[in-house]
Image 1: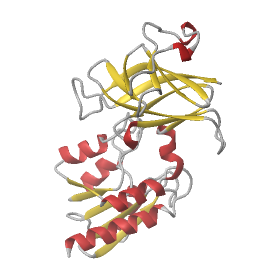
Image 2 (image 1 turned 45 degrees about the vertical axis):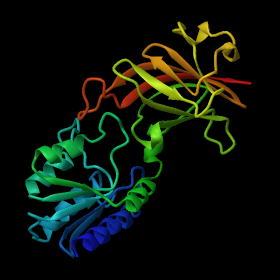
Image 3 (image 1 turned 90 degrees about the vertical axis):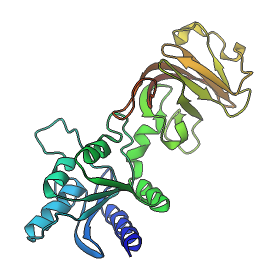
Image 4 (image 1 turned 135 degrees about the vertical axis):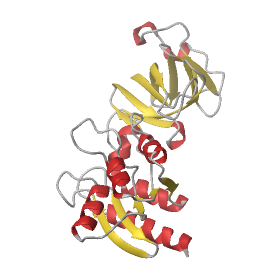
Length: 275
């Protein structure tokens, strides 16, 4: 059965990812119907991505992979700024017909660019089942943490707020008991973004303030709403029992599949003020 085959191969790709070495654990499986033709994982061969390894191993075994399906736990790369051929182009050249993806790259500069390249190349692109997507993301390890949390009393980050429920956690340090604030963001047109608190009393807008130093006492702000609109250049504030985190929205950008007001990534700078 096609669905049973897809599930089995996607699960095998997750298991392959767990064999990876280093950060960004990724696994790939090349299959034709129920038969596994080749596998690969990051670190299996020096400096090669999991998809590269699977394709190369198939070629070394003189296996024709045209018309096959590739199952990969992470979206294949598409825009490497090196002399290397990206995985999406290797997939196209190999004649692979279908690519099943376990998770999209959390880097907002790369997010779904690989998906678009494959689609535009006439390759069918499908997602893993929901439970195996969760397994693929877990297998990726702390690679995704870079784009879901920030560490330090001061800092900056760019992240995709269409992923992880729009949540971005800011922590004072990386310890288990570190003071933290789980900020949450969603789209608000071409030049602004919503900052959510869940209920009244948590978030406020430091209206007209453009620098953190202009905010004397963050508790003096109006925390009457459950969300605030923060324009580019403005500062939103979140508070909890640890104190306040001040977040200045530096920029908003669309990804390759979005235009106009459809922004999906936000760049913020933050400052923590402990109680």
